Image 1: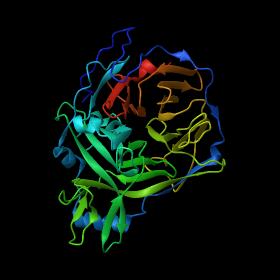
Image 2: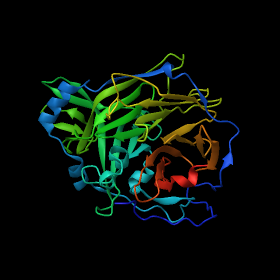
Image 3: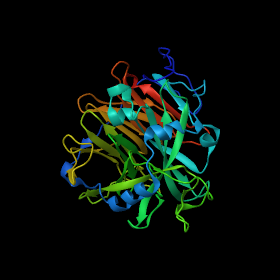
Image 4: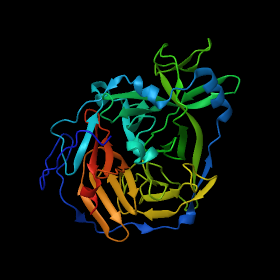
Length: 398
């Protein structure tokens, strides 16, 4: 099905909505990205890191296909506030009240079933058209990162306006006593390609998950219990489903400075994942103070996986800072600066353009559509203002 509740754009009008700054037309940027040597950036991939333990977990707990998870979706998504508007707005939603305002959990990455399967079968994966959002959890409102999860959101007129949370876990233990533990990463970006889900791990690269291996767990116990208990029961902080990591994509660079994997996005045209770094021009204590980079890594030919070793096919030095989102499609790039409340557009042939953008902006996902305009999906992380929305990409292409 096509995206629901498409919102008509009133030509030439840019209003200020909740959490949204006035949006103007594009202005040419002073400078654009410059090329870096691609040979400095490589990946090593291991998709079988946890095979033995995961086989034991599947045998012990059983698998829930995506359609079963969505049949049991237990949260209601809500409409965007009527005050939220910007040029090219196509539609979107908010999470329910508690998730919209929760100060311990923050949405970060976004991908969709259109990334996973393209436009085939109207973008349905296992019978559902889905928006997938990654989150990280703190141990207190101002606490340390404690775990991470994904949210699967139905985006199809055939199904209710529902979503379900799935905990991300790392297999532990052994094949005879399989177990799992929390994954305390920022989960700043996420890409879904085929059956595989790639989640950014800031200082290391990506963690890989298989969407065919969502496990069923016991929802009893207490909220702090995780993994196998002495009586053989498996708990997951009261989550009914967990998604275990299957492998790791490790980043390497010979440039002298390791990459900060702040966000990722899938480019279906070039069959690659692109990543970007969140850095500051100066004055930051928790982030690098240097120019950021954007790197493209191609998948193995004809596959939705990376080869054992992969060299970047494109590497860029960027003139912009505080970048929380990136997307690329058919030679075009978009960069979202949460700190600058700016969306940058760039191609090597036409140069760059800038657009005023939303506050607390996060990752971007390109949505291909065979019959309607292509879209850019993105979201805001700020508590109380978590709009997840799509805009026509043609409104932001220079």
